[in-house]
Image: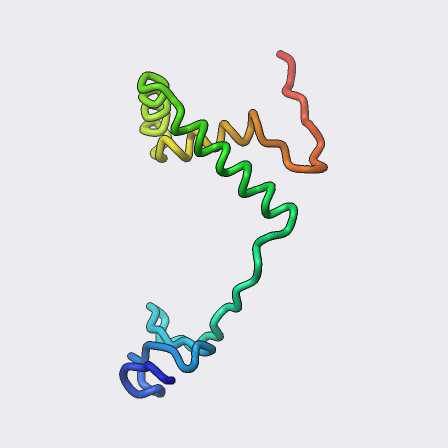
Amino acid sequence: MAIVKQPLHSLSASGSIGGAVSFRATAGGAVCTMKAKKYPQQSTAQLANQARMVAARAAFRGLTTADRNLWQLLATKYRRSAWACFFAEYQYQVVQAPGAPLIPEAIL
């Protein structure tokens, strides 16, 4: 079933046809795209990555108020969110990509 507003050949067409084609207006003009097909995200690597994200979020939620304030202070300095700063450091210290070599820090 087609759910499209405005004529298809106009600059303001928007909507979708049969769940396969999508029309939308952008700054560059009207765009017609094929809708992306969903795929199962259940591979071993994807499940491991999901588990790492859950662990990182649990670690962030488990911070004390004082620690969270320190992360917020750092985030303000870099114009990021506290979560973004925490997660970047968490990845650096805790998460190592499978098969990636461990690069030692320079000794000063």
